[in-house]
Length: 271
Image (cartoon, rainbow, N blue to C red; front, side, top):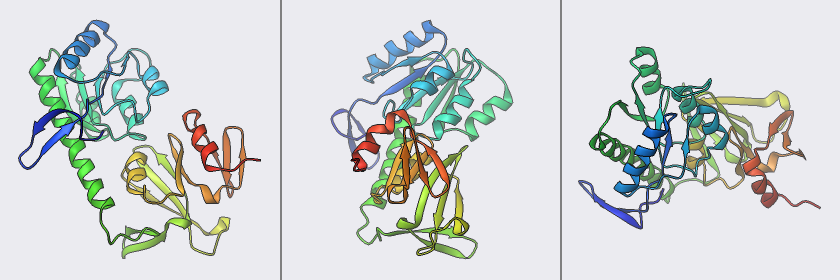
């Protein structure tokens, strides 16, 4: 989401002009879902879709679909809203507003601590409740985008490497040595090798507490790192073989997501 176009609003320091914010609704009670849609459109937001189950959400969601997600906790089917949000967190930094009439303490804490939640609303809620929750979500997005802009606009950044914190300070890793990144629950694992030692025995890994989409943005300067699946970013220079919906980096067999096949065709020369 870029801050330009429509819907002006003031902050304490800046005036941001925003294009229409996309708010996805995940709610299995259609009357509530349609009521929310009308309310959001009346407020000036865009509602790209309504999903009524966790399964449908995960099958159809992609990071470009929504800037903010309104998520009911109790959904029809076998996947509740919290577990759906945990899966979404692997591929998107979109803030989530939970709406529920459930009083389960365990689910509430899981929703708050294991997802991208910014607000937790109990039914029945008012138009003002939704408006405040959306404003808080936009504030979160703005803070995230400003942090990334500060990183990407720093003229002194070295674009060939990253420095990763360990017990002895910060370890230098060349971006060319990164093999791939893999979503691992709410975390992300980076697999790399030391320069000049490209063999199976020399692989090392680092576990990050951030999700894959967050690291994808922070590593956007490294043009060789490409998203090929909701759970994988690969170094295209290390790909040894491609077959149908899979590719190989050393001994690792990595799936290619349906929505990322065009990216593969654009990046490689096939004869």
